[in-house]
Image 1 (cartoon, rainbow, N blue to C red):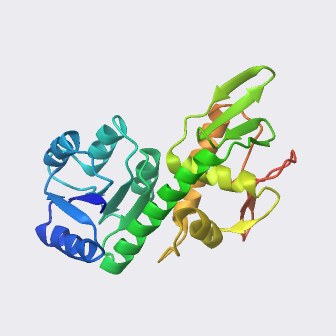
Image 2 (image 1 turned 90 degrees about the vertical axis):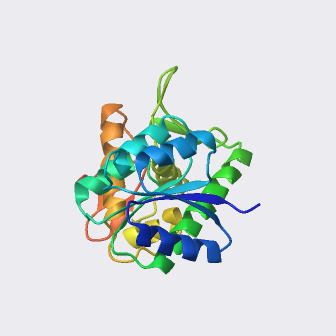
Length: 239
């Protein structure tokens, strides 16, 4: 059954271009010119993905993303003409699966869509993994997609977005190995990022804040001039 994608953008030509390319790939596309109509459409029928512009009159893309995240974990790709760090961080914090600055190549957009769906399909495979992964004072339960901090007999669950979980799971599954930002994009986002690799740094910053708030000993180490790693050791460099 073909997947349904909602495209939310106040620019008609942008919606039509995205729709044309997605329909060529076999997706069913519905267009919405504002956040209010998109939210009403979402409440009536949940799509398989949403592509949302940030800057729209009335309800902004961030507000729409926040409302949707209250109801479901459907994948969301945010697009914006403003390529600012704060926007990218907010998008990741609100649970967006990807952030694409305008102008963008329609072919790149399709590649990102396919990559997110491949990652979602891979996430479903986690449900058959009954192993429990551990590193320092955290445990990962792939079947439930949960990460908990362990302190004696007390387990405290960390509140993570899907992307944050995927990052931690990948790093713990490959602990003691160093990965470049490009390698992380390929293995976690499942595509070669076009332009730069700041999305990785933004994601790591968000995860580190949550780890610090939970007072966990687990940390993501910076390998200066190269990338990131996770180890069972006690020494770590942080940005």
